Image (cartoon, rainbow, N blue to C red; front, side, top):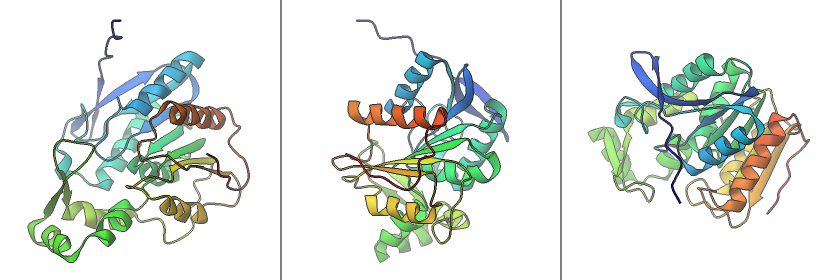
Length: 262
């Protein structure tokens, strides 16, 4: 069976560089995909949401951050500030109506940071890696790696998701501290649905609980998948994701309190 043709990306000029984007026209509020650290807009979960958007006629926007996927720039030269600015620029240009932001891993942190300016209609966060540069990197690094980051400016970490090591730079760590959120209340001003695997080695589920504790009492739903890993890209996981996005997009995601599921 012949695979469907790969849609060409459209290049969006922003701040002296070009970001690769894919835009599906449709009804609003538009859904915007915010990918993870070193991921890209053609990943499995983004493709599943695009198929849903095509089926129901929903506007869907996805893009690659600077230094990711098909966008210009060098990954190791970028920080959270750069990727947040990318998200803000794409949303302003391609999804000016209050969007539903869907953030995976690092994209969950970016979505929460962007919410202050974007005023989204809702958030769906998959294994949200809020404050990951500090809580999941720096605080977990042994002294030897910390010294290497500070003295050499970079440490290259082996990754199970990429054949090439991931550069963790001093600039990334230091810039991340400008955007830390878990030290106080977080109110994105919209419904939030979090999907979190309990077998996730990269963003452990207690980290998601830290976020839930800082979100408002109302309008927050947490779904825990006991066997779920970090990717959450199996058929049942994708069904949960589409259901969560559909619920938020249709205004059904404002359930009170936090719930768990399997």
